[in-house]
Length: 82
Image (cartoon, rainbow, N blue to C red; front, side, top):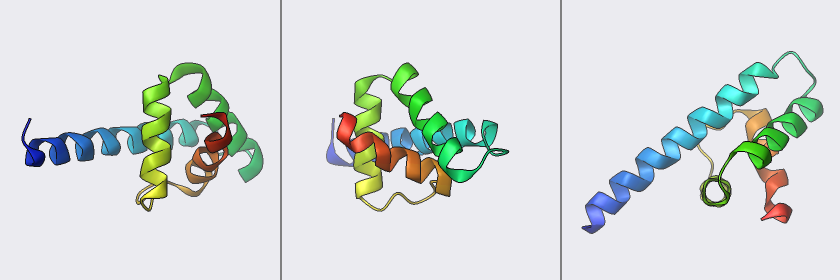
């Protein structure tokens, strides 16, 4: 895989992970921020593959553009669980 293909694949994967995290957050939007972020994190831990969890944390470490506030807080809470 060429480096441009790796970058494109990584960007596509990151965009999908951000979209998924934000969609989970939409479901919990009616709850307060701390509860919503805890539930988002719980869902990610239960249903996402460990590689996906590591990738979303790495994406956050690189700036986390596009993550909604509750999803961002949830992803930050995942770091100690990796």
